[in-house]
Image 1: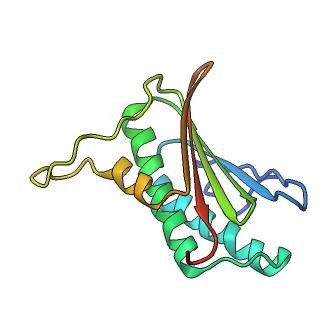
Image 2 (image 1 turned 180 degrees about the vertical axis):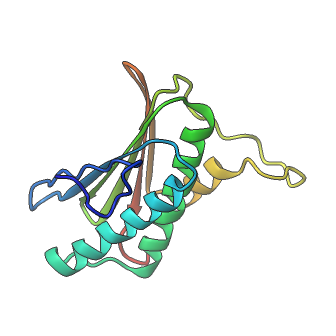
Length: 152
């Protein structure tokens, strides 16, 4: 089902999951507004999970989900040509954020360096994630991060 709120140059497709594991997936085409769009769609998904499914989602979880989406989508746009697929899923008290792109190289956290400006995105994601997985796919890679829905 098409997300009618998506601009025409930024296709988004919603896939409804089961009641036990609701999910939402959308594709980003790499336009300059797609990072903000991904953040908006993630916040909207979590708000719907609260209002329509009674899932308890803390403000912290929404903020961290938007932060993780920003970092992962930014990296995908920077290092991989082509579209980016984002999938959000609620499972076991967490939101699972999966970002798939066409880049073959798995991300690597850099050594700590207090003098380094920028390139801290993966460090941030790892610091807030309950679980992190990066795996190569047939055509590209998939990064999956799990974020706890409560304030723990």
